Length: 172
Length: 190
Image: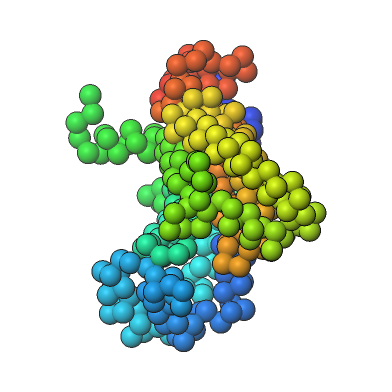
């Protein structure tokens, strides 16, 4: 059931499905990449430290990323506990990918996804990787968050109907 | 007049939830994405600049075409590039340059953005088909690029923060100028 304040707004038009579709595509991309990373054993201490080394090694042996301050942060904070971070990333990345795909806890999921994409943007910046990828992904996460992407074609629609407005507007 | 930070924040994020079944979503994030992707297309011109269409110190258009032929996602597509596009490189290079320039300007300025979005969608799909199998390329980039152009098309994205806002509203009243939500760049999501 839907209510609508303004008859002219596109509640039933194709435009109303734009943000939910963006959310679903984002969820598919995150989960497909997650599964590829699982198979490549990236969510392990060795996998994660290897990735960080590769990022900041000059091309052609590495990506040639240039943000030294971010490398320092990763070296100081992530590398010493790489096994823990990798495990947390394995679980959290899967959860927010699934959340986006299903439209469940979409606002929280899209915020977590945004943090993930910002981290990747900083990590890959200045290197061989096409950095616009992370701009496209980050913009999608922002749009899904601000556009209440789970309120159509999503579990959040049922959550909102059953439980009312989300606490602090942050969950659904 | 917006004075308090909380008022400004509310204006940016929209009036948010109006109840469990009804929310208003601001359209400005789509406008920001449109502008960013317009810049993306213009930025991408730098490795296909006429008259040589090479990328200087980076990979140029001709090298990318060679990679498409060497790593075809779809065999007939690789053959088409090899037998039709590369022998007529200069013609196709000019067409591609002008097309990407048009799409970039259309999206950046929000001018005839639905047309720009449709052409951009075709370009993104072409890039996806052509480059998905090239080593080091991440095919999902092109999926997301295509998806965004679809979003710009269906939301008529040039009507928020774009020159299309100066045009009369379309007959379908999707963004009826009498609609206060449309004027404030929001749409009812549910």
